[in-house]
Amino acid sequence: MIRLAISADGHVSEPADLWRANLPASLRDRGPRVEVHEGKISMVVENRVIRKLVEASPDMADGSLANIEGWGENDPAARLEALASDGVSGEVLYPTVAFFTAYSIEDGPLQAAVCQVYNDWLVDAFQDPRFVPVALLPAAQPDVCAKELARLAPRGVVAGLLPAHSDALPYNRPEWEVLWETAAGLGVSLSFHAGSGRHQAPVRGPGGAVTNYVVTLTGPVETATLLCAAGILERHPMLRVMMVECGAGWLAWALDAMDESYREHEMFVRPKLAELPSLYFRRQGGVTFQHDVVGVANRAMTGDRCLLWGSDYPHPEGTYPKSREILDEQFEGVAQGSIDAITWRNAVDLYGIATPEGFSADAAK
Image (cartoon, one colour):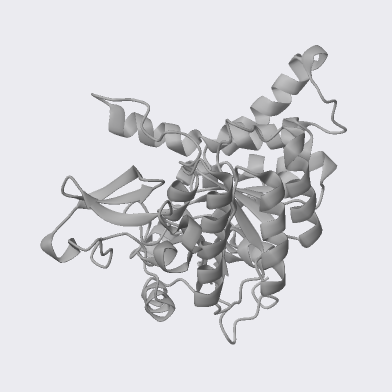
């Protein structure tokens, strides 16, 4: 039985004019903006079109995003109403287009300013305790990421977002230590969202749509493995990390493959770990999924603590508006303790998100 549903993955949109209205004047001309290019609503940054969204209709001629389906509701009251209609009591809020925009910026100070403007808007707009705003971190500069977390933590921010991949500055580089240490010390978890940090469509032509989607979903496997095998989670035992919107079916295999590789190639392994790599992810990591019967079936190998359900509202690949129906289907026959852990308890434990008035977590044990 689904006693409570809290989504560990939802998406929100910033106002279309957010950066033009709030960036410092010296950065505004190169900052993100929404324009019509070649008949399509497009995101432009540093005077480059970085993402074409949808065909522009006459009522979008000014670059308005108001009528773009699936862009992401940014009115808190309307959002809560939509969640309630879906049987969901709260959610963790990730960007929609803002993270593609921010992570395409080549200038470090501009990227930092763009993230700061977005974060201030997000935290100000979504103060209801049923929301968990996730800070957008300026990944080009790990030390600036740490400073941004430290700036936001007193405002109640408990999660920060990084790209799933950081090819220019891989996550096993020593420059990232300042962020791992800061996040662990502040009790802020770090999320790595599928589809960010690398091109989402490496395959063109026949089969591309399906292949690219699968490749995108499995992208965080590399990062999850690196965080374990490079000793990052071992050195920072209080650091929590989340692989977001990547499904959970791959996790059992990846944990086993990490351990097999560590044992069979021990002579090449650096650094040497006190435990097998999988232990660190089971202890400190997690993944979110929408509908993943394989991931649910494999929980005996992964443990319940690593799994968090998310609706991905309002995106079309998500479970809205049939989340409760889909949850009932994929958790049929699962023990109640596992259902509770995956559908709400893990999110409450990690993020401190509020449960509905009158709901007792203790009574639900």
